[in-house]
Length: 168
Image 1 (tube, rainbow, N blue to C red):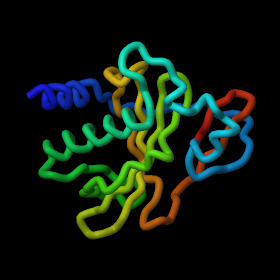
Image 2 (cartoon, rainbow, N blue to C red):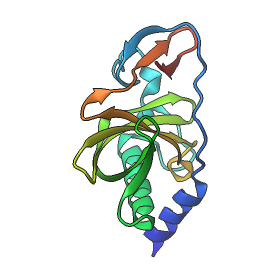
Image 3 (cartoon, helix red, strand yellow):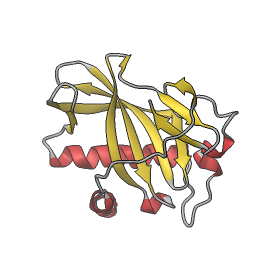
Image 4 (cartoon, rainbow, N blue to C red):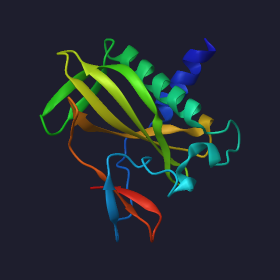
């Protein structure tokens, strides 16, 4: 029963707002924000302090899995995502959270990449953004279709001067 309560808390705290990243001078394009961790060590979630449970890659992955599972349980067993490009709702099942692509975007904002399989067999890579100062406070605030069957719809650029990533 405790797990159900935590799942409900995650859902209740979830706010679907657009994630903003300050635009500016940009250097280089990358598929995901975490691809050059040696250049940007502050992006590693394990280095971010937390008030309660530490925010690390394993905990970020668990939050995503719980969020997807609880959302799918409410929607007929599928994680539903509206694909603006195709003007259709995707009926997805989680395949894998890419722990190697979990990273901190800025203070209390985290990024994750996960693979999903649509009900028609097409594979989608979704970028998932979360916000919170601790694992207990993390909420998913944006889900974006990044790839469809391996073809990227956008990339990432890093603004070294402002130390932030932005979608390209």
